[in-house]
Amino acid sequence: MARTIVVAILVVAALPAAFRAARQTRRAAFQVPPAVKITGTPEMTAHFLPPTRTHFVHGASIAELPDGDLLAAWYGGSDEVRADVNIYCSRQDHRTGGWSVPRILETRQGSEDAMRIRVKSIGNPVLFADGRGVALFYVAVLYGGWSGGTICMKTSADGERWALPKRIVTSPFLNVGMLVRSKPWRYDDGSIVLPVYHELLRKWSALVRIDARGRVVDERRVSDGRPLVQPWLIPTGEQSAVTLLRWSSRMPGSVTVTRSGDGGRRWTDVFGTRLVQRDSAVAGIRLADGSLLAAYNNSAWDRRDLSLARSADDGLHWSKPSPVERDTTPDNMVRREYSYPYFLQTRDGRYHLVYTWQRKLIRHVVFNDAWVLDDPLLANPRG
Image (cartoon, rainbow, N blue to C red; front, side, top):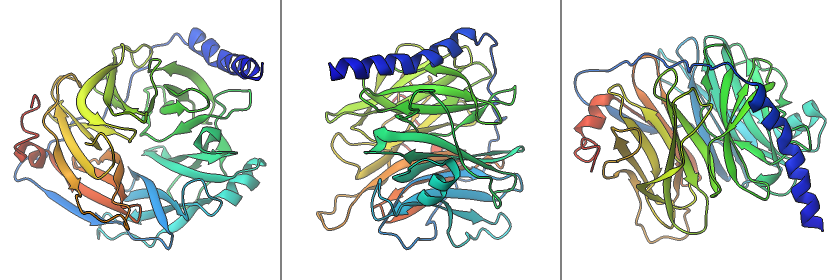
């Protein structure tokens, strides 16, 4: 009886999204930046972002501000879904290349006070910046674990002074179970397409379209009945896009892919790839030649291997994996995890990859197209 009631509640909660999808008729176009290819010699640098005085850090994202500076955000505390977790940020001066001392961007108590709801913890910060300003999306866990989360948003004109956070209402009933992790994109009408996923009782993924005030105007499912979460959207044209999805299961699976040809309104059946993984985040980016580059944990059991793979046919075939991190050290005293990759391409054409390094630090890797094509494994996108 109780389960029947819960199912009925979830059906009712899903009705507003169905109505939004039914009345949304205009075909929006993705704002895809022009390809900028850096010719010449391969370039790659790697360093750690400044540390925070926390037991662990996780879930980094990165954005390019209007003035050319980079802003990175991540969360840290004693552990996931704990009351002492804060969201931190650090800013890189584009003139000197130096990163600022990390400062707290959002706190559990600050979210609770601003939105007048009980907040257990916060996490999963996602930065989005363009000429209109900066937005921070993140998850506020209201109860239990991540499945008790709700999506929040706060904005800034310059990345320094921020408005108070508010909730994004993906459902008028309870508004829980929805989370965010992946890079948003802009549509040509000024709205933002935000990849989201659901974890309460059942796992699924969607694209939520929100206006400048954070109001949801459309919602489109992008996955099937399998537990596929954390969709990573890669626009490949004004109307075309590829989405990579995380296989969230105790059993080994693979990075999965779906495609759209109408601006994200409809999606193909999800298909698997040769990129083996088990319950770990994936990220992707489009290179100057139109091929795709994915970052994922190349392992059926753990997160000790973070690798890159390249596809020249929108995710159907992939190169052999090229490791960014591959840790075989037999040491269980250290959490040897290299996970939660996040991609950004800056206006100068360079690619930025940030990821969790042993849950202690955030690693930042910068490279160009020439470096990718110089890699003997990535150079052949069909393996």
